Each structure stands twice: as structure tokens, then as C-alpha cells.
Image (cartoon, rainbow, N blue to C red; front, side):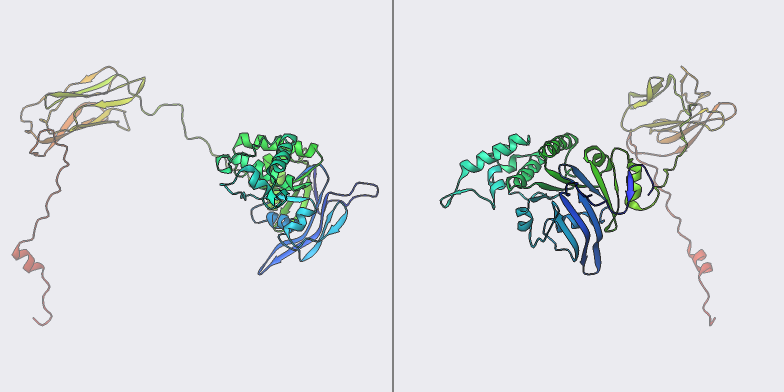
Length: 413
């Protein structure tokens, strides 16, 4: 990929007279049954820097680091530390060579103290007993030197995620690691804990330690790393300078193609209001209690009243006149005018011949004139204030003569 600060292929080897790389991987290949996890990987990390390895999920980042840590043995290739080739048969060999790894999922015992977790497996002894005084002294020294802020006597179960990660870092430092591998260290951290971690990494590199930082969070990588190696589908595709490489360029190296441009859609919000209510009030009388719905420019329409009533209002599409629907067991009332004008109250009066109690009135304003008309469908209810819905009409059963006419004629008759 041609871009500023980005180079394809393998990083250049150390020149004559130049200090050897702290970590160098040459042509690392690792196969598992049915899959090649790493293929001809090239990686070169300088002493005292934070070197990031980025790639998509499943690109082979963690497998490569487990190979460097001695958890896997490479099928092909060579591992060099400070210019000399090494062969690891187990993580113990890598630890003895100065490599430590902080896994994405912490490996701590919650019911142990910080001291007991750190020294576990490398306990200082006096005679045949654990020398807690010596262990505490070394842990306090490491904590103060690298600003880890750890209390050796605190139970791990009482620590937060960020403090637990610092305990893991102290574990590898306690064993004399000069190269730290951090596998997705920010995946479980909140933003302020990420800031604290980056401060700790700055302290480590100032002391001459080397950090290999595995992540797919490109903004964080550009913020903390001194150099970046990109892995795609198990192989190295290039190196980048975070100071001159954009997130978009890194992402394109990771996926191997240009990123699609996000689709831009015009907003459906219009400046012209579709519905405006101002000072509209509707009064009804039901069961001795009045119910009122009102609207004002300060807010949406509000309804208050007895539980058995319902009122809704909606504008007609052509003239924006009001269509009001009132469902109530009270007496059906009609009106001569129900125009929805600001500050106007629509009063309902009962004309001659109005249906009795239990009717369901429907008020609808004319689209052209705004004059209200009322149509009522009778619905009887045994209880005053009932909000029961209209019962469905029973299906009429066919008479016996109709059934005989509709019955099929036997084929033999």
C-alpha cells in the first residue's frame, strides 16, 4: 500500500554497526490440523519501544505471541533475542530468557493476596518456608519504580480490573522480564484505566524495557505505539509509523482493500411543522366528573379524566380541520360547529332524537367547510363508565331450508 509512513513487506534487517533488535522473528510458520495460523511472519522490535501488532480477529496475532512465549513451537522460522537465536520448549524457557506475557484473561487467584499471586511459582524462601519479608520488599520496589501502586497484602478479590492488570505486569517484572507481551490489554479497561496503563507503559520504556502491544483498536495503537506491524490472514503485510499513518490507512492494510464510503442520507426532518395545537380544549360530562383534554404551544396534548373515557384528535389531510373521536357510555351529543381554531372551545349539545345511553358517537369535521357532523352507533352497556369495546356481531346461522338448498346432491340421485 502506497502511503506516507507505510511500507509493505518485511521490516529491514539491522545494519552493520547498528544495535541488534530486542526481538526478531524470521519466517515464522505455525500449522494446526486443517489450518495455517501463521505463514512466513516477519517481526523486528527495537529495544525500549512500544511495538504494536494489529490485525483483524483471527489474523494470527495471539498465536504468534504464544509462539514467542514458548507455548507453541514454530514449524518453520527462527526466533532471535538481542541478535542470537533461541529455542523455547516451554514458557519457562521464555521467562528465563527475559520474556513475559500478560494474557487477555487474567491468571490470578482471587483468594490470594497480591504478594502471594506475584511470587507464586518463584517464591523466595528462607530454609523451607516462604520468605514474605523478601517478597514484600521486592514487590514494593517494583511498584514504586514503575508507578504500579500495589499493596502486597491486599486480597485480589478486592481489586478492580485495572489494578489486577497491574498485578499481572508486576508478576512478569518480578521474574526479571525485559520484554513484555500484552495481549489485548485495553479490552477490559474503562477509559481512565487505559490512561493509567499507558502511563505505566511509558515508565517501562523509560527504564529500557520493550513492550509488544497486541490490539485492533487503531486509535489507541496510534496513541501509544512507536512502530506498528500489520498482520493479515496469518502473514505480515507491512509496517507503519503511527505519527504519519492514519487510522483509515491502517484499516485498509488490515482488510486488504479500500474501505467503503459510508452512505449519506438526506434528513427527513422538515422545518415546516405538520401538526400544531394551540389552546384547544374539549369538555365532556361523565358520571358527574368532567374530563378535559387540552393542548398549548408549550407542550404536547394532555388528557385527564375518568378511566372509562377516551378522546383523540387528528387533523384532516386536506384542510387540517379536526377529527375528534369520543368513546363514552354517556349520552350521545352532537354539535353544530367543531372547527379546530386557536382558543376555541367545542361545545356538544344534544339534538332532538339523539340516541340513549350507551351510544358511541363519532365526531368528524368536514374537510371543505370545517362544519362538524355526528354519527352515532348504539352500544348498550350495563355499567356506567364502562370502557368495554363493542361486541362483535354474532354470525347468523343458516335456516334448514337454506342448508338443504346448499347441500351437495348425491351422484346417484
